Amino acid sequence: MVSVFIVLTGGVVRVTGSGLGCPTWPSCDAGSFTTTPELGIHGFIEFANRALTGVLILAVGWAIVAARLQKPLNRTLTRLAWSQFWLVVANSIAGGISVLTGLNPYVVALHFVLAIALLTTTTLTWHRARQAILEPTPRLAVVQRKSAILSVLLVTTTFVLISIGTLVTGSGQHSGDSAGVPRMGFVWAHVTVVHGVLGTLVLVLALVLYGSLRTRPETSLARRRVVIFLIVTVAQAALGLLQANIGVPAGLVAIHVLGSALVWVGVLRVLLDVNPQLFRTVGLQAPVEAAVSIHR
Image 1 (cartoon, rainbow, N blue to C red):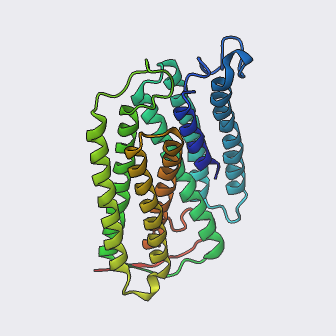
Image 2: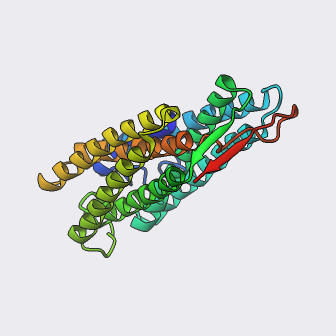
Image 3: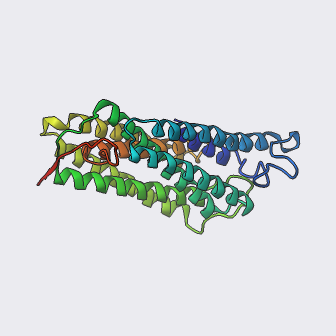
């Protein structure tokens, strides 16, 4: 939840023009690690986003401790928890570099992609922990090859869609601070069209995937995941079309950034439930056997 919320606050920082509210890093201002009255509302917004990283570190620390306390020890869960820590560190450094470079749009885009990587590890950690509780002894997983391939294509295309979204934002009017902040050298209308085409392709792939699962009763959970993903993605697409046609208002942009995080979490859950053999128990002190068969 915190890793999703920090994506939203990052969007708020951008659309309110608070990216340089704290003009330096790691301190907020010369001689002060916190915001000062002189920095105004922009300093408060930027510092609040930085402070949320501390909350995120506490949450990740708890995940690491909880993973280490599992009996028997689940090494996959422990490694996932530690990967969250290092991604938080990397993302904090990327955020600092973005400030020090005057909000270079490519560094800002990297900052967002690292946030998506963190969302990936948190989603996988949640899935693995839930799996260990609800299904401590893995069952036989039967995966249809067509569905497995479609789910991988769906995740890949969704990642490309979100990545192109950073180009749309990096070329658009919300630079994160003043009009003097450099923008990417793309034509905003052109990358927006590419983004829209990729969004349509994601929806088509999700519908085809649902069709491949519909005739098999044991895939009811995977079908529900696809339906939820379709609902979230359609809502995200509608929001994108609306904001593009009414002048890209700041509030809708921030919600759209949040929507991209929800879309990514949704597609990962589709992948994991379409392919239940993924992220099975490994590295336990007590041996557990899992059988997987893949049918054409």
